[in-house]
Amino acid sequence: MKELYGTDIAMDQNAELIILKEDDDSKEIDKKGWISAIGGMNLGIYEVNIYSDSSTLNIPLIYIEDTATSVELGQANFIDSRLQLEGINVD
Image: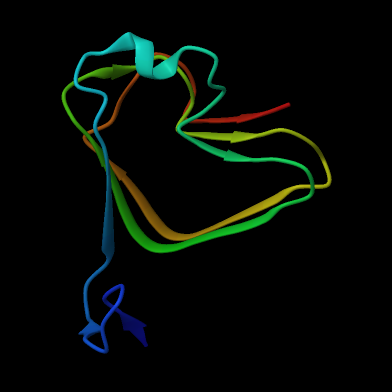
């Protein structure tokens, strides 16, 4: 069962993550991705709707740096995202 953060309230629908760039390109300077997984991290994103505002994102939504890092997406939906590049980048 999923719970609303900080409460005991059950969530039936997907959680929401909203990227607010607000047409401010400086928010992407020296960043490789809006969500970064590096250094052997194991990242899992489950039952989440990921939105962005009307801004064009010039860096990937998800950046994976090395082969020791793993990312698992389960029922993750990318909605209304305007991407200049690919949504997921692996280096």
